[in-house]
Image 1 (cartoon, rainbow, N blue to C red):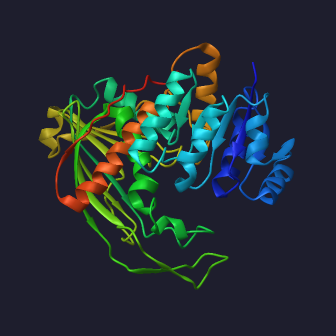
Image 2 (spheres, rainbow, N blue to C red):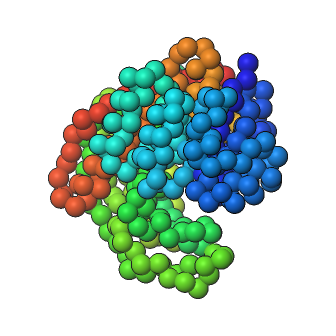
Length: 368
């Protein structure tokens, strides 16, 4: 059974969504239309990918054939566009972050539930092979009982590759709004919801020099913190150390690892959809050789389909709608992730630890 969908927003990430939905999910999803704030961008995108209709936002929301809409607008526009999609009676899948303010996010999710509409949100990477195999390693007891974890997104900014990097250094940008959702949703998939957060903030540069086209040579005035170091405590008791930064050129810290009573699982980049989990187990039999840790085969039940793909959460939500069950990359997870980000930012300002008011269910594992 097919579901007809539309896309609002024709920026950089729309190319990946459209190409991957057409490549992987054409048996389930039919993209009828794209829309953009500037109509000419919708026309170009529709022509490029042979999509039947280039619409204004209002035209797309009025099309009764379209049941599900993907919001790929800039972060500051998400709350307003998400409301419009739901008020038009469409199911919603939005890029991260779900909103910038908790009040908006809670109101949007409440509206959807009251009107029987589905909400899904990126990041949906935790549904793909590397993260699902890593979860299986934990759930099957290969590392014993999880007790600690570390999550590190360490890079030097956006301005060396993105065509329009300005908003990454304004309100709604920074490493937490931009990249923390990948790591937080991965942790929720692996370990369950978050209980409390604490962070300190930093900013190494007041201005950033753009080296990407078409703004090469221009400067960006930095208006938000660009480094956060934090500690999360999960509801299951696992303590997570976290670093999210746009200020560091190179680091050898692992992106994501979970440490258990019997070993460690090294988890691939939670922003990518390829890579293999590595499991290291304690083994008393190896003490005589001078080491009691060895690598064991990690599960590979789930198979990767691409190094970098988007759209898995859209397809999974469409199947959930057709089957009448909850979707995995849910609005509840998106709102819980957003609260963690908002409270980490607030903690960086106040120096206080915060207990989260929201929670969410740990999503069901994907079928292999």
